[in-house]
Image 1 (cartoon, rainbow, N blue to C red):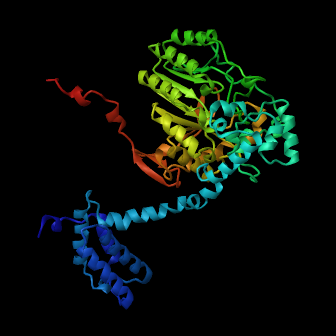
Image 2 (tube, rainbow, N blue to C red; image 1 turned 90 degrees about the vertical axis):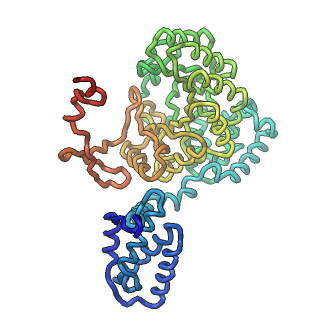
Image 3 (cartoon, helix red, strand yellow; image 1 turned 90 degrees about the horizontal axis):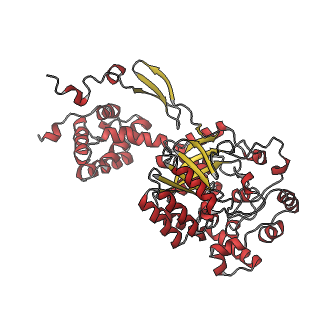
Length: 522
């Protein structure tokens, strides 16, 4: 016999063979099917026919108690096929491991995502899937605002024709009269702005469309009772334009301008009643603070929205930061690629790439629903991702927008496919009573985020965070208890507990003979 035919069978395979043992009287039709599978298994130079035979035998045993002898197959026949499977497989995976275990594990896991796969297109359609509807919306809005193609496709045209008042909004979006009255009274106090492009993402006839909820204020913003806290980070601003929560990281708020004003804006107090750009003297004070503090490593340029700065100003800021030796990382906070992707032009991309060559640049965006990813925004992110170290997303968990497993899973998978890495999910902040109605309980958020583990790609799973004087993780502790030399871990996707052997403290704590320490002692 060859060496392979004499090789011992692993426990997975012997267990499987024991399950298949026995005889019986197989019906002719079933016998013919198994005979054909057995012939294919003997002749093929692949593992799949062997697996198919063993799976059919398992099904016959489970359904009618028929063992392999009922099909004229001896234990020796099956052992020979099992050894052949291990030889063919590049990694030596056995038929017992595959047919007896792995396929069962997959079959048990698939129901965890069945509901998502069945309902994600309906419950959480992406802007790519809705593109035909969006294009119809765009045609209607272009006509209402009298915009030609060149104006629509330009950043300046989008901003110049932004929807800032209820009358213009009503021309672009069909809203009930009582909604218009509510929006009117809210906008007397809070600014509203959405670009024609972003307005086109709103689905007609969907009452609480997730894009509509983010861009058009409702009565709750003024009806919600509560004490408004001081502007975010007002007690963490050691220098002009600077927010600093951590010794190695600062944020520079370079403008109060955004292409649209979100109804859940954490910096609602910074928006004010008019757009403002700041002087170079103000920027220089911030740069001087950073330069004078060598502990600072990572600088976030934010606002407002960093991409609302003119290219020349953005280049000047990045050049200044690149000239500071201890600044090693730069971030740009922007929502523009989903609200006004027309902004992402070659000049901007060249500026980003040039700074990235000197030190890593990360673009940090906020996408809260798969509906915000259209062919246009996806292309913008694709082009950005070619020029910078990473594009990261910081979503906000909000009622009616992304507060279900299906909506959040779809969001994270969609943005990952659009070259954006899911990074954080923030629990909607408690600071501003204007959006108390949009908040989601922390436990709900935990259930949603932790349901992703083991069900979608690992690098599509964001961290769940609360902004509470810094970013505080909200994930549960999956270490349940200790048993002897092991810790018991809970798998968040199934609740199953598993023992995980821990490092031995007596070995870890003594470096006397660790690695190279043991040499040269004689």
